[in-house]
Image (cartoon, rainbow, N blue to C red; front, top):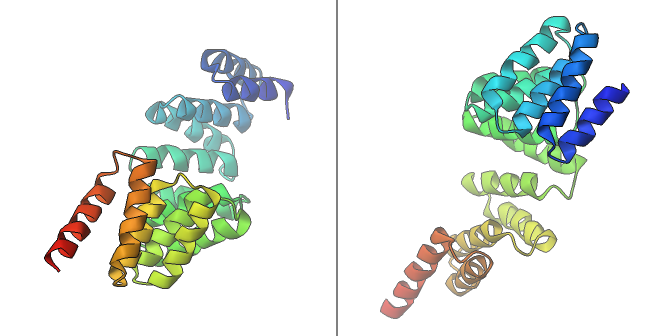
Amino acid sequence: MDDKILEGLELMKNHQFEEAASTFNDFIEKNPKDPIGYTNFGNLLLAAKQPEQSVSFFHKALLIDENYASAAFGLGNALFELEKYREATLLFERANQNGIHEGDLYYMLGLSYHHIDQDGKALAAFLRAIELNPKDTDARFQYGLLLAQMNQLDLARKQFEQVVHEDSTHSDAYYNLGVVANRKGRQLEAMTYFKQAIENNKDHMLAAYGLKQLENEMKKG
């Protein structure tokens, strides 16, 4: 990889966005027919929370090379941030077809499929992300959520248990363990999980509401 690109990536990693922009711009001026410069400038704008501005850079990269997978992936991320989920899905699929087979791509594919109500494909994408990176708690949590929504409660519980095993501060996983326990009729266990979620995040309103509901039911019973 070109030294200028490496320099820009290092600056971006350190949140020195203006310096990184200058470095990537220098590369683009000297290499206007290389898609890597536009792609990295697009990724920089994404990192700087400017997805709308990033789109044109990814498009420029794809005009130079329509099969440039990194640009397709970047454009997919930008469209996802702009809540254009169906278009994002197509770009992630394109990036996959052109050679990106990393866990991050499958995770984003899973989120995109879920947003357009293709939960079967979303489930498969999250599972693939976990297979590629078993420590990806974000993908595992989303996989568990979908399993729970599909009423596969025992399988969902195993995923949430693995999440809290790897991240004991994951309040949402504890909350969903509580939901699963409650749906299984194990109210005391559910209360314990709701309390743990609140201990990790005192502002977890769903866990607080769930706990209050169970406490009221137990008083009546």
